[in-house]
Image 1 (cartoon, helix red, strand yellow):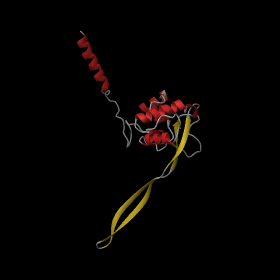
Image 2: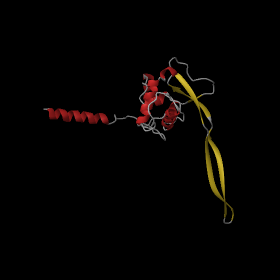
Image 3: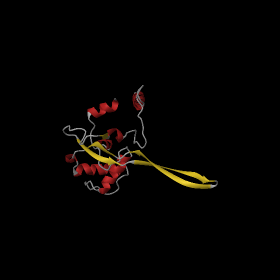
Length: 178
């Protein structure tokens, strides 16, 4: 009696592991962890100030460096004589970008210790937990976010969610499904 029940339960469990028919595949970009990218949360503005002034929502900004591509080629200047020529081209201009971040009131020593613990679990933070947003913690945050497409050592709301430190709102979940 119990055996058929267990077999049925296992079959249901395996069925839950497969994707639903017509389910979208997650687009993976370079360096994305589990198909997630913080690049979608970056906002570039021409006007001064943050993109939103919704109560309870905090924004911060950083300057992303320019991306310069260097091309080197060997050019024959005379028969059997070669010269090395390098050209540099700006692929992306330096730009100021905005992204949502946990509000200052949220950055308690307990929250920061949880952040350090989450980074430690991923091998990005190796020091003892201090509960302070010190240089080693910022470097670990920067390494984590850089792998997700945001080159900043300031904690973003998206990274905090990915680390399990902040809850998703229903609006954010709906936006990810659309």
